[in-house]
Every structure is written in structure tokens, then in C-alpha cells.
Image 1: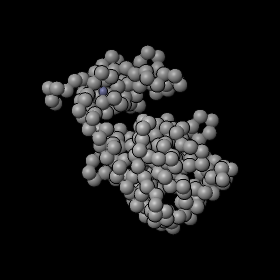
Image 2: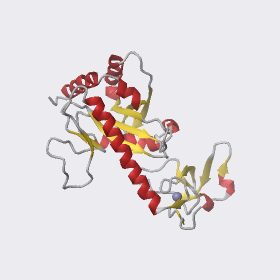
Image 3: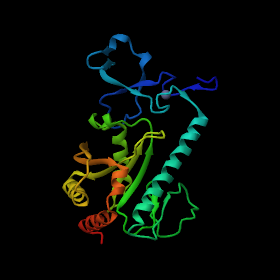
Image 4: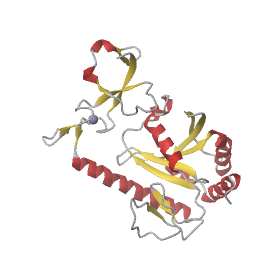
Length: 260
Ligand SMILES: [Zn+2]
């Protein structure tokens, strides 16, 4: 540890905090420090804490990613790294989609006005494109804190948050896609396609149609009154599938929604 490091303001340098197992809708920010809770509160078998009349679980502090310390410079590097990831993914998608639309381009979405990108670019998501046929809404996440284990927690953990955000930000007629990866030189990037449950069969049919030889991981998560369906496959697998099948599928989806 460097002497310039300062304890994280949220976890106080403890790295892990306790969050309610069943938080109410309006108390997402409720947490307590592990040290505030007597040792007897912890149940070794269930790995849960019982304190103040409710149950808590230990999670990595989301503010410092479990480092315990905050480093302003490090954060700057994180943001730089995230941008580099977006650029790399954008270049991958450009190369892929140019097979069927040679003039298309993909760029990082500018965060504020005064952008050099002209009309015809849908400026939403982390990556934007001038393609008229690209069916996906793209969000990029280069973070340490997601885990495939998230899928098996009631609310989906960090990956659940990605799903929620992609659904909320996705324009009608596009398919939300989250590209997520752990930081590091040899980490595999994954894409997750997200659909409301009604579209599950549609998405599976597309996957069947576009490739006879894919492996994926899919899961259904509760989402309010309905449920959502997410398919995960490696980015390289997606990019090995012909884009034209996805273009046709996107057009069919838009027609199904009465958009074109
Ligand atoms: Zn912290």
C-alpha cells in the first residue's frame, strides 16, 4: 500500500460492507460496516448476518472495488482503460458490420454536446453507429466487480444492474447488448443479449438460425412483474457469425413491434 492511499469513504478501508438481503425498493444505498456488527451476528452456515432485526450479506465495496483505498489517479486510469475498451470493441463491430455495410462506422458515444458526429448517428449507449441496419444497442462494461455467480443471486448482482440499465436505455426496436469483460490483458470479452421474456423464443430462434454450432449460456431473471431472458456468448463467437442473419432478425423484430 502506498502512503498516498486514503481509506475508502464508503467501506472505511474494510473492503467489504454489509447490504440488506431484502432491501426495500427505495433503500438501495443502505449499508453498514462489518465492524459495526457483533461477531455473533454472523451465521457461518448460511454466511448471512442477522442484525437489527434483518438479514445482511457481505459484498465487495462497490466504491473502491474492494481495494479498501481510493486512488484518484487510479480512477482516472480506470476511466482511460474503459475508453480504450470501448474503442477496441467499436473497431471489432465496425470490421464485422462492414462485411454487409461497407460505409458504416462505430464510435464511442460522446458524453456531452458539441460532438463532431453528424446527423444520422443514434447517440445512445456507449458505442454509436451510423449504420441503418445494425440491430443492437451497445453498452460496454470493463469492470472487476461482475461475476457469473451474479446470475444465481435473486437480483442478479452487478450483471443484473447491467441488464436493467441496458433495458432502460435501449431505444424501441433495438436489441440490448452488454459487452462485458474483466480488466486484464488475457481476459475474454462476453456479449449478453437481453430480451423481455416474451421475446425469448424469438431470440433463441435467431441463434439457431445464425449458427448451427454455438454454445451459449442463458438465464431467466425476475424483473418486476415479468421476467427477462439473457443469453451470453463470447464476443469472438458473435463476431464469427454472419452479420446478415442479425440484420434480418433485427428487421423482423422492428416489424414485429410495428416500427417499419
Ligand atoms: Zn470501499
